[in-house]
Amino acid sequence: MMKKFILNLVLILSCFAFINFNHAVLAKVYVDIDSPTFRPMPIAIADFNNRAPGTGKPADRGSAVAEAVRQDLAITGIFNILNKKSFLEAGTAVDKINPSDWLPLGADYLLKGEVVRNDQEIVAHGYLFDVSRGEIIFARKYRATADQSKALSRAIAVDIMRALVNDEGDFNTQIAFVPKNGLKSDIHSIGYDGTGLKAVTGHKSILMAPRWSPDGRLLAFTSFKRGRPEIYIRNLKSGAEKKVAAFEGINLCGAFSPDSRKLLLTLSRDGNNEIYSLDIDSLSLRRLTNNYAIDVSPSWSPDGKKIAFVSNRSGSPQIYTMAADGSNVKRITYEGGYNSSPVWSPRGDELAYEGQVGGRYQIFVIPAEGGSARQLTSDSANNESPSWSPSGRQIAYVSRRPSQSRLMIMNANGSSPRQVYETRQKLVMSAWSPRLK
View (cartoon, rainbow, N blue to C red):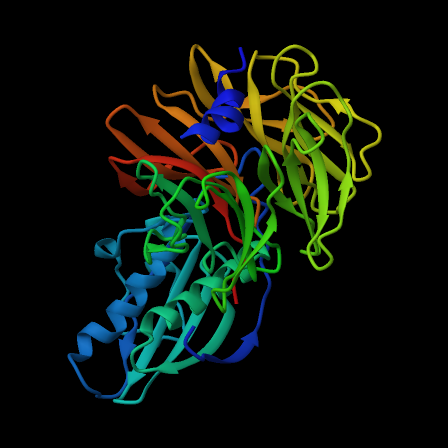
């Protein structure tokens, strides 16, 4: 009944370029993508024109910028990127639109532009149109160094997100996870778009529970590099690591507080697995739970007022919440015999968690105050360790089968799952970063 707790708590013991913007916003269109009737927005992204000659093949510059924007918008789950082979318009200036050329294609929005590149820099002019109204939504100028065309395209995609859904999206984020390599594992991270895979730590040991600080400066985790579980905090800029908890028994890492000044822990220093709050600067501890049961996996709400956690005080692992001082404990999940790994949505209105169904783990979402849970995954894999994107519109998770593991991202309603990374190693414990500078 306590199989996963035993695994987590007992068996482990024995084993951008610089970009300038010139903004001219002529209209605002905020689409309600949270509506139950929302459908992906059809958008046409035309290859950018090449206004002046530069180095390289002129035809490649504009098409490369546009293609990178297409790729970025496609992975958001918000847009339906129309096939450029169906585009009809020809001869129209980039700052003008002929709606009759785009409406038959089903386009709601259109991006056009032009690019100038020399050996030192790229300058792009982007124009986003509302097709049905025949109106310009924004006209903006972008400038980047010559080798940073991807950063320039990313800036255009971010501006499209801001203009249409009033949010910059999850582009400049990373997902941390642990590919298990026997007793010599390390935390890795990968970009939201599936690029930039790298090792973050060099412990070559059992590592668990990576947790980003909300300000993006720190990564906390549990490591066995000295033979027993100890909690470290790594400065992601300098690479310096600080050991913050090394008590006898269990030392498991929980989530940071919203101000990044405190860290939740599960410790057995007093004889039972209890939840504590650690002040990172002073290393002072405050005990938050006092129960005979096992209390683990604490997660702070975005406003800092509540903590979600897992306890078997009802006889099986279930999700609970409590006030930040440990008072007002409330049981949230009642369905299913094994529910764990709760994480708050950025709005604080929902909790995602993993629950056991038919012998496998699946991802669920439930209102933070309790109620009916929604099952988001239902395939034959073990789907575990959910983590919300900063926008709250997507969820990362680990999907494991006997012969392969995948790091996945899906929309927050369970639709449009996509693979970010795949390996034959066992993947565990995904954690989505905040937006990084």
